[in-house]
Image (cartoon, rainbow, N blue to C red; front, side):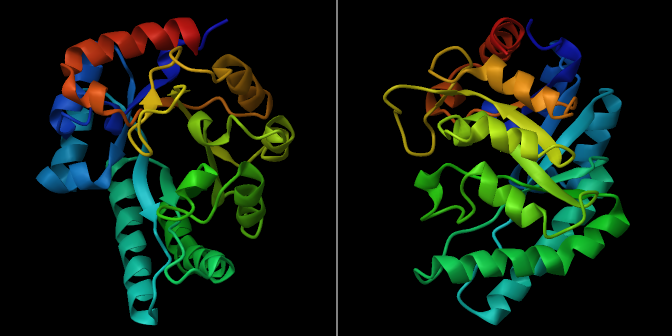
Length: 271
């Protein structure tokens, strides 16, 4: 059985050609009840205007992306990253979402172990602010191919181990099928993540991938066992929004309305 429509969320990067209001209004037209927002898009009009658009269209914000990027070469830079994460937490609270997605950052000087320590220290520096704001921090493990430029936290096991250093009510994980589908230990780790799954993102892995970053496919166009992963995530207790997050230049060049129609149809038949 496919996932119900009332759990569908448009992650804003799927329709990167639209600003916040355009994406929100499209969700309302296509009866998509939630939206995952991105900070660089929000910055175009301001947080207050983005929150107003969401309210006026009776939507919910499933998550805000992104926080993290805690790694940096100097102490001053690392402190600025911490300050920026506190601002991101404030933005999430104003938007009415309880989840800030963390993409944790690469090693600034080839010291991957040191970078991972920076990530843990960065989360520790903002977790109380998040708790006081009613926002939970969702660590998103990336595919290992992104370790050099986006995040030293790769694989679901590593992200859970990091999250377990903090209270489960404050820090958890976000599972994106694109980043974890290949893992031979995936289903055991999903079970292990019970009580800490804060988000679930869907898309597909095209063979061969057309681009390092912008190569994700629409659900059903690739090789990921999406429904099997979804059922495992649900068995681990997650019943929240399912975000469609697709970085794909061809979709960004296409009419947004066509992308929305295809997204809803594939969600209902593939997810």
